[in-house]
Every structure is written in C-alpha cells, then in structure tokens.
Image (spheres, helix red, strand yellow):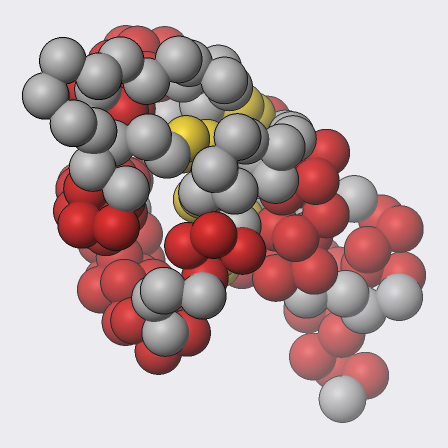
Length: 170
C-alpha cells in the first residue's frame, strides 16, 4: 500500500506541463476546438475537454482519484451550468493515464453509467499507446453521438455556444 502510494506520488511529481505540450501540441488543440464546435452544431449539448499533467498535491495528499478531480473540474469549468443540463466533460490525467467522462444530470438520467464506462474503456487503449489525438477524437465522436441521439437540434435551430470550445489545460 505504501509502495503504491509512493509510486503514485513519484509519477505525479515528474509529470508536468511539458508532458501536456508533448501529448497535445497547439495544432492538436486547434483541431480539437474545431471538432468540438462542429459537434455542437449538431446538438444542444456542450462539450469540454480538460487535459492535466498531474493532480494537485491537495488531491494526492488525501489520496483522491482522477474521478474526484474530474467531478471538481466539472463544476469549476461550469459544465453543469448549461441551459438543458446536458454538458459533458472529457477529462484526461496524463500521470495516471486516466480518462473520465462526467455528464450533467440531463444526460446522465438517459445514458446508463456502464455506457459511459464502455466509452472510457475504448479510449483507454489509444491513450495508453500514446495516441492522444485518436483517443480524444474517438471520445468526441462517441459523446457527440450520444448528444445527437438525446438532444438533437431541430432543422434551422441554432445552439448558442454556452462554454468555450477550446480544450483547457491544467
């Protein structure tokens, strides 16, 4: 137990912003922003992507999980604050190769937890192989399909952009 905790602290101590820039260079950030915008023209939901090198020390100190951090960021990034309660956060934690998807209550009532977990499992393979663009593109496509299914835009309807499309980095 102690050895696992020390290994976790070590991974987080040595994973930093340079790792994020290598995994997600500016050109990829631009492509992801365009893909989020294109997705949001097809449904009334809002998608945020957040990529983080490591957990803050306060999270590590209390042995919090990547899921705990994703839920906190869901609130901090105001993903919960959309008109139809249909925002989704795609969270990537590089130090632990962890992926989390957090969906607002308007969507989580319609999509079973195991469906979200299946998406995360499929993305995990790409992320573990260092194919971050493939994994994030797949995540966007799958989340978009769910949003189009449950919150499609009517013909001619415009979705006001309630949240920034650009991925945030931590």
